[in-house]
Image 1 (cartoon, rainbow, N blue to C red):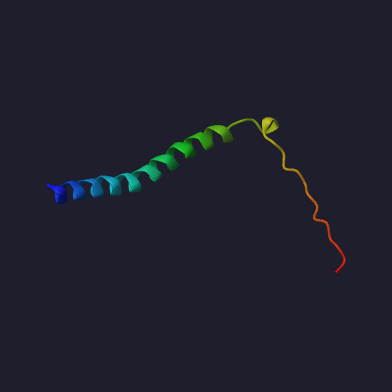
Image 2 (tube, rainbow, N blue to C red):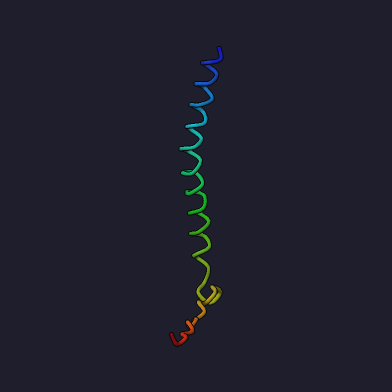
Length: 56
């Protein structure tokens, strides 16, 4: 019975490790699409940054 339990748990763990990231990416993609539909005036604007240069 110990070998069967081990194989069953391994199989379940494998399925979860394969399916969970895919489900998570679908859920997050849906949220991202909803967020990107916000009007442009409400989005944050990129800040311009300058890199300081020092003499060598």
